Length: 378
Image 1 (cartoon, rainbow, N blue to C red):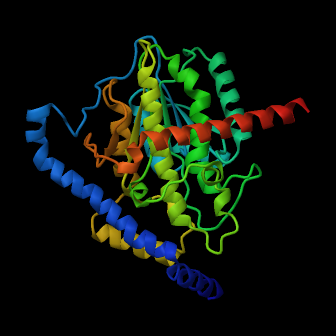
Image 2: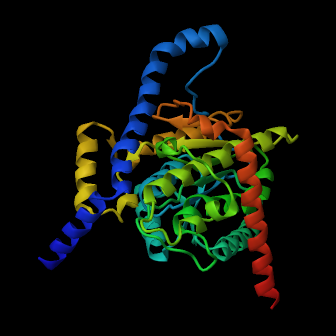
Image 3: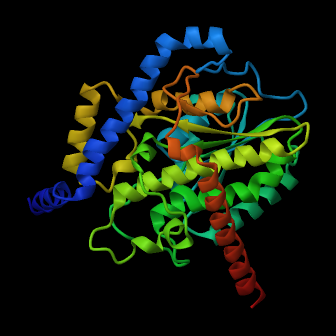
């Protein structure tokens, strides 16, 4: 009874917050807008394609493997939901799947479940916590050592930055980062930078898939200074703007994706690294675990009635579309499954903003490396 009263109190407090109504109104409008774009594209795509050769859907490659190289994939947030669903699907396509997650217990449990459904699955698990730069560096070093000791080609073919959280209270890491910004954007940026040499070393085209969200459409005022990107600006506020930070982190991931796409497109080389974004839509995962139980249940029920809620095995389709799109596909935003794409928000294509974010993020990356080297040398 006491726990029920506590949950009801939490629900009532959250219900009265600005962030709840931002999620309830703005997020629903954002997902409906994305589906509305798909609806119009369905009727306009044939005439547009006829006039300009432009298509809003992409075919999946029949094969992304090589006779000499077993394709290797790293998936973050692989212990549940979309990450686990993607790991299973990729293992069935012949990938050697590296599952990256915080909990060793959950990693082993996920591996066991995948093996139950696919006995031939090639799997390896590593612990990594995207909250901490040292943990990301340790993962990179352990991964490279394992790769050197294996008989596989010293390269990576697919990186899926899937990990993400929705925190409802302010928490900072020991390195001074807001936990949501660290997990959803800063960590994936650092990890991608560390693994990029392995992706470039692939004997055939490799790919980075960043998992974003329709919620990025709710961001109107964008700042990309260090205090905002690392989340220090949100510390000490009377109310933690959880919905706003989540939206912002997903927009940052988009800006980063498109800027990396532009930078890689300018590089010469036969083995191209492409960057694409996947938006799974609304999926029933444990990302809402910090939202009061009663409210999350009501939200899922309404979304199910509106036929907007998907299970992970369905929501993963946009991620698989992104992963298996033809090798020359890059800089696009997959949404809705069946190889379909839509335009992300206008702000996400702001090249000046993307360059500024890249500079800020790179500076944070450099500072973190210097700090780690200083501790190590000491």
